[in-house]
Amino acid sequence: MRSKAYWTARAAALEEELQNGAEKLSEETIAEYEQAIEAINADIRDTFSAYAAMDIPEGEAVKLLNAAESDKTYAELMQLFEETTDTERRAEILARVNAQAYGARISRLEGVKSRILTEMTRVATTAVAAHKLFYTRTLQKSYYTNIYNIAKGLNCGIDFSLLPTRAINAALREPWNGANYSDRIWNHNDRFTEAVQNTVTTGIMAGHSVNRMAAQLEEYVRSEGADGVLYSTTRLVRTETAHFMNTGQKAAYDEIGIKKYRFVAALSERTCETCGGLDGKVFDVADAREGENYPPIHPNCRCTTVMADAISKTRIARDPATGKNYKVDGDMTFEEWKASLTPEQKAAMETHVKEVRNKSADKKQYERYTKVLGDKAPKTFDKFVEIKYNGEGTGYEKLRLDYKEKRNSLQERLDYTWVNGEKNFIPTGAVMTHTKTIAGAGSKKELRDAPRLVKCYGGAENQWKKRVGRIESAKYVFDVHWYELDYTQYEVKLSHRREKDRGDKK
Picture 1 (spheres, rainbow, N blue to C red):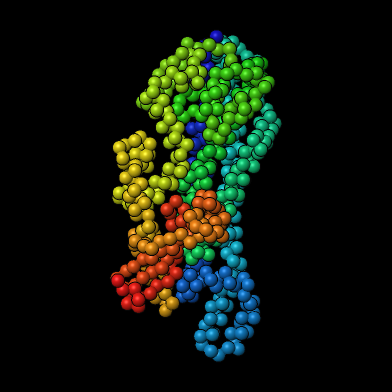
Picture 2: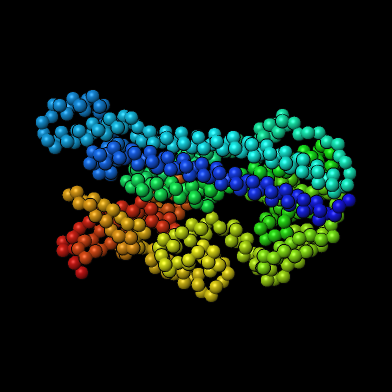
């Protein structure tokens, strides 16, 4: 019989091959979402171009568009227009006529939202077909490869049956962890669709520019955060691939009469405590329970199984401090390996665990720091993580102090139109003084918009706050207000502007 190293190496090779295919499938699915967002953004621009042709400011067009649904009907407005002689009143009615005609077609931007639904449905339909083909091949590859490896390892011929199509289809349809692969794709897609529609609706209600909304949608697809398309899709495909790979392996165990299997987790700082605790343990194939004693144990799980009867002299482990591989005793388990680490290796492992656990939050923090600090922020995300976790002197503390000092600067250019039609802006970086919280966290007043803000931007309701401040230029004093989460400004608006020589001279 071949050594345990043989079985482990064969299982690892299969897992790597299939996960490489999963990565390609993820990239293809994400590309479909990117294409959908491009089409949606084009539709949004087309929607507003109609108002640009009327020479109506975009902000006013939004108000008219939203008012059209509850306004008088198109016919009634046309009759009123014919009966009115006042020039200003006729212009106002005509604007509402145009809004009503356009609003009747899209009904409070339902046209754009309908396009979003159409594009996202197209992506999901394409994804389901592509994923079904890949997971079918994954099942077949895992089943036949496991049988071949066992036959070669035992140096004997094995009589086995072909994996019938009906068994494959049954495995694809069977729910695991509450749903099957198709259900999960549609559930993810529904969540993405809702998020995109909310971004558009919220952006329009807040008066955001088309370019700003487009940038938000594009970032939503590319973001590696837990709510982004990139992260969610990659995790979904990796986990489904692991499920079908291990389903195929178990089918092979059942087919050729293997009674027991050994759980195999990598001896690596990336391995979680649950999988590490299962490493090396032997279970009956008949008692295999996915998520409990059979992989995948959790999303993104990369564990596998081998025949339980193999014995190995050595096993490969990864040094947490150097990242290099080395050999350990073949019977060493994950817990025994952890106990054998030096203090330096244990410290490196703890640091890595923190980095992995906090990666999504750290990326968002780095983006905020870069936005506020500009060139003073670390040049790369990896450098930021190094400063934060590796105790590089007082570098992180200084970084935090610099960020706090500048957090009251305007983080995005604030465009506004004054009552006389004057268009102007307050530039990015303008310093805000006399800042205070008027609702939400840190105040005694409830922030009623907190549920909407959480839905649109994340965070928890008790973390959001509404703040006000003042910006002074050479001539004016501007009163502004905004929503804030972790020192990041959202939906900044100008509430008042007045000239300094009317009571604000220093």
